[in-house]
Length: 528
Ligand code: NAD
Image (cartoon, rainbow, N blue to C red; front, side, top):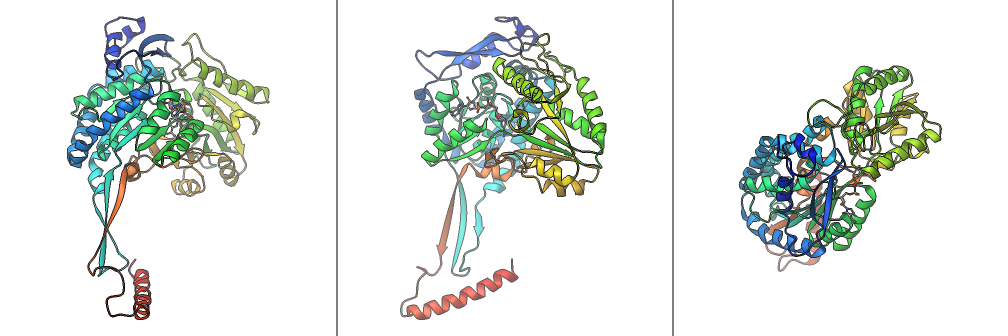
């Protein structure tokens, strides 16, 4: 148990107000600064504050990062990997405190906070093991193989800005920062104003793991001030958050001609085919739709069930959902925690009220639960949803899901693809081959078969990102590393300038080149 100083809530955790004060003091914002109060959704009490950084603070942080980066770039990838592996070990060693902090800042249940803590060491190990091969110089073929060669080299872009949201503050601050650091970049992270302490705790652990000073910094403050200031200073920005903010970031990155990757919202479909194991699909729907109280970008919000299995599925899904326990204890037990704040609770309530006013039936939930916590809302299942209502088209980002009967797989695919978004989908079937074939028809960056999202996210070797309004670029896998490097081609000629040698007329040289090209094209077909 931690020392209690400040709100009583700390008594339930391994944390104390003084611990958060020390974390806040890591932010370099000298002189007079206004501060931002951080409140816990568990009790809606203030738990601490962080500086409201200015554009000058951001500029100074990026300058410090830039001067630290040149030494880091000269270290070998193995040296960088060793530090990141140590960091992964420390995350596991300090898991209880990190779990408490995630719960305190987000109000999510402990079992869902676990996913965040597990993700970081796995990401560190993946990139530590694969960084050398992905970033090694690569020989490429030349159009004139005997006369020239070409080599591709990968150099860090410099300083990477990571702008992260509140829903997975631990995972989403690090999952993009780890490959950036491994590639030899410095990182300046701007966490959401509601969840700054997790990012600061990670900065502390990175320093303890031996990361040289200045290479991972956190700037806190209002998104609309600190976010644009960061995008103006860095060499690459990776953003996770809402689609509209993503567009603003992309516009600014475009103006500055820097690269960006955008991980945005979704309206994720789940397809239950006629041969699915219904108990398994219902269990998957519960896990997918209500993890982190539905505040998960990958969560299914629309479920399409073959009409012959619709009643059976609804029985199983509604039964399992009604058995879910809501609670905000700092221990394993309750499955569903809190929404992040009052505004978000109000937004979720409006979605459901609008759906019901437009004829939807409420099979479970549909009520806020102030008796459990100030921003708790029951897991909610809707049917008979008007296809034009907000809940059918817009991302709710809460514990709300609608279920629809469909008459065929083709209809399920057509309705799944009827969205501006394309982040994640899942297909449920007894035949995995059939599931993979259906997956190919779905316009989403990730499609999981017989799992709602974990199997896709946990395939760290495979890229992840969205189609359409769900984003741009990919995280995870080699793609998630290569976005952070400048790619240079070094081409060498063994015969001097690629031009007609002295004494050869342009006409003869042209004939020779056409002949050579014809041979090369033939060879390319025979020797792929
Ligand atoms: P948001 O877009 O409001 O905020 C995200 C981050 O951007 C925060 O750190 C915020 O401070 C910052 N920000 C705000 N204004 C900014 C600006 N003008 N310039 C730069 N940064 C700015 O996101 P939110 O609505 O709080 O988060 C939920 C959304 O995030 C949902 O739509 C969810 O689907 C999405 N999300 C996507 C993924 C993914 O991997 N695709 C993961 C988690 C969340």
